[in-house]
Amino acid sequence: MEVLYDKLANLIEKHSAELVRRWLEAIQSDPATASFSKNNVAYVRSKAGDLLRHINQWIGYDASKQEIGKRYAVEGRDMFDMGVPLCEAIRAMYVLRRTLWQFVENESGFDSAFELKQMRELDERITRFFDRAEYYVIRGYMEEMNRKMKELWRLTSADTDKIFFERSFYYQ
Image (cartoon, rainbow, N blue to C red):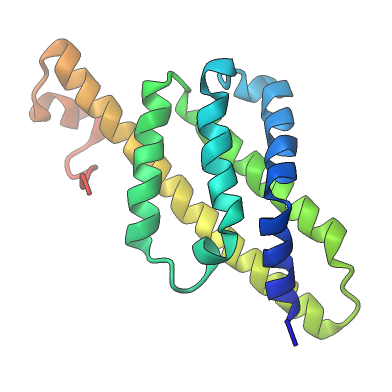
């Protein structure tokens, strides 16, 4: 018998396109994410769709910090290159998590303490995943900002360490 956790994760994967549509509507109508334009919508649609189509993989215990770090540091660098302010990139991730959780709450229909416990486990896994992803987006974004500052103004690591602090980056 499939447990509620698996049912909900499978439901998210099955409805990933609808969730991405809702999320894009939310970020495109939110003044706090005004930088998400037609120029970068295809990119974020693809990334969010891929995440939601494989949510069970990403929030499962098998997803390593290194896998999450590798993917989301690149996304952070990409957000910088697209001209999306860091605060808007993180806000968009928050809106995606909220969109996802509202869907889960509406579709769950739990009616027992056991199912409520499974909902909490799903929430904890989603939260842990997004916390890690946000960290790596920020890190990747700042690494790209650091690299760009060095390139444009021919700054040294000693110069940029005054802004970003020594040992801020790991470049994984």
